[in-house]
Length: 149
Image 1 (spheres, rainbow, N blue to C red):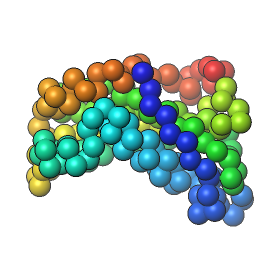
Image 2 (image 1 turned 90 degrees about the vertical axis):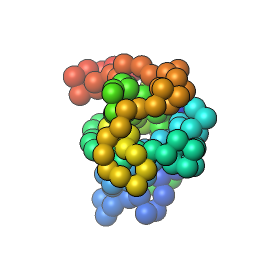
Image 3 (image 1 turned 135 degrees about the vertical axis):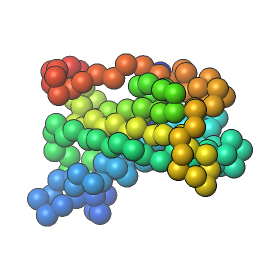
Image 4 (image 1 turned 135 degrees about the horizontal axis):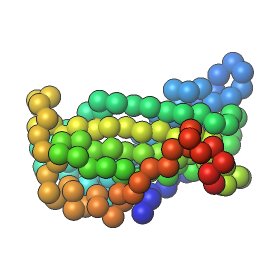
């Protein structure tokens, strides 16, 4: 299962060429990430204060397939690709609302569970695994299969 958020490309998201700046995708991914965790019953407050873990990123990637311009409404799908011993793989697919058949960008974060206040990896708590499970699925590699819908 996936979780989706919608957000417009804003003035601060575009570059001098009039297309979305690559950095802006991190803002869109961040919105989708926080809402995906919240939909699993794991707000950041719950993770940080209740479970005593932080989720720093140790890997971030993004692939761009089609340009996006000012005021286009983007739909960002977020889902978990793998839950490792201490890592959580979070995947993103971005489409425009006006042409939902075309993936304009994809992204991936690898988060590591660490004890709050420390940067030492700890196992992903079972409670977290259980709540994330409905949103785990295999990622599609659009670089290898650009015609995939």
